[in-house]
Image (tube, rainbow, N blue to C red; front, top):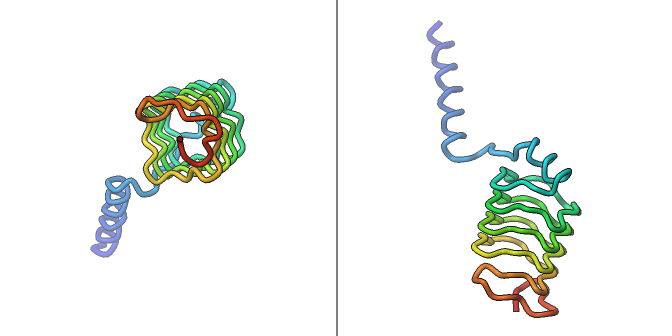
Length: 136
């Protein structure tokens, strides 16, 4: 009986550690469905979501958690991403033309080949025509 109690405590302790560190945190499936069908998902949880190639043009993602999300090749042209967390997101080849990224978090995001012309950048400036992979 003592072994069973010790085993149960170990499982509970492991779960607490995972929750405290954020390990195992995944996106909310309802939020993925919502953004794909309505293109409106303010402050939603899309952490590590698989959205590669998705058409999210003009989407309202203000304040959304997209950290670690795969948005490779996604169409985010004209999307509203004010204060969104895109840390570590894969945005390679994504179309961010005229997207609004003011106060967005992009630390560690992959912007290789991302189209950024006319995007409203994190610091409020507008990216120059031909901006690819970086706001110029």
